[in-house]
View 1 (tube, protein in one colour):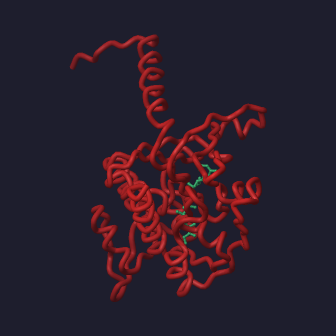
View 2 (cartoon, helix red, strand yellow; view 1 turned 45 degrees about the horizontal axis):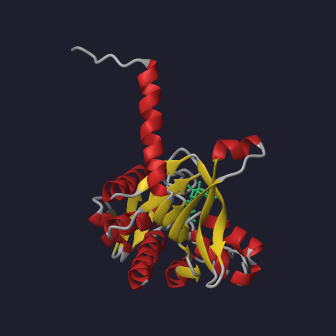
View 3 (cartoon, protein in one colour; view 1 turned 135 degrees about the vertical axis):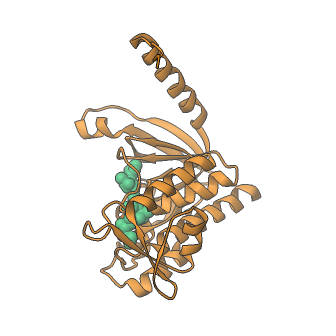
Length: 261
Ligand code: 48F
């Protein structure tokens, strides 16, 4: 077998060329999703499948958010109906525990969710932290985000971010609702108050997260555990049906809003 010879200069040149092509393209996106957990990746799948230019920024260098940790590191997560239909659509295998309740392997869940969203056309970029939003007045709306390398943030260096515009921004950052928190603090005119998440009550939390998913302010949406934080809802632990249903619900609402506008 003859291996093609590629020198270091070319390796670097192609990496920079194609990276910057991607960045130029995403600088003006339809939808920005923050967080590659179950809700963010499900939203990315449905938004990209609908033909919207969708970029997902993830702070870490991995997919899955809270999926990978399973339940106290046990590699199973529980899914209840009707979320099983979404997992089946993505080819994720489920083992029936009882009527309408299933167990899923964490590695398969996060890998297939990520690959489905990417195959549908969503662009995932790792190692990026979203630390602020862009806003506009008259009408008041969120119009994008400020992004910084996670590594730069960790270093504590004083470095300005770059900005990415979008018609919709989804906070899928999990328990801390980081994007909505910064918007609430820096833009009081958005009138977002954050009561904080409650202790566990899985049976009611799943339904309430799905019901509470959606628009928080013009251009700004919440999905997944971020909904608990901003609506004062209980946590539910390692049952994830609501996370994927929330991702689908936020995608449907954004598709509808963008088509209307
Ligand atoms: O926490 P996470 O998995 O969010 P989720 O979709 O799902 C929650 C469940 O995993 C679990 C649960 C269900 O019962 O309680 O916790 O709501 O994923 C959030 C992702 O967002 C990234 C973070 O690294 C994680 O992968 N993230 C958080 N803040 C930022 C961020 C930020 N400011 N910029 C970029 N990524």
